[in-house]
Image 1 (cartoon, one colour):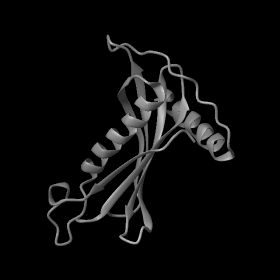
Image 2 (cartoon, one colour):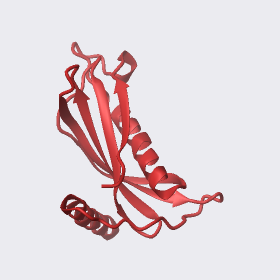
Image 3 (cartoon, rainbow, N blue to C red):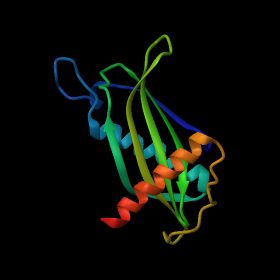
Image 4 (cartoon, rainbow, N blue to C red):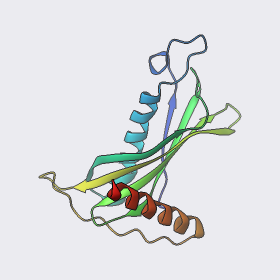
Length: 147
């Protein structure tokens, strides 16, 4: 994998709904995903980036008020100017154990000073996991282009 970019948040009242046991808003998680994903893409491209789309945003488990949210992002595929970034979100317990809450795939495009797309370094998968992620990203791209 490319280098991991990590973000850590404590879920505060303003991040939650008003239920008896307050849960994290999905939109708040999406904002955090967009930020950590953009940082991973910027680091990889060494350029400014803009979000193109989020292909998959799957909620696996809830996150609650006062939970620690850890997000890890890495580039898994590149095109000429675009990059797909996987963002895994976890709730981390005080003992360090983690429960996956969400996995998302977001696409970013590198841009120049005039906000025009600019080429990015090609991603070359090296490990079996990288090859699997790369192939899956190509399939997601194919489906996006068919729409």
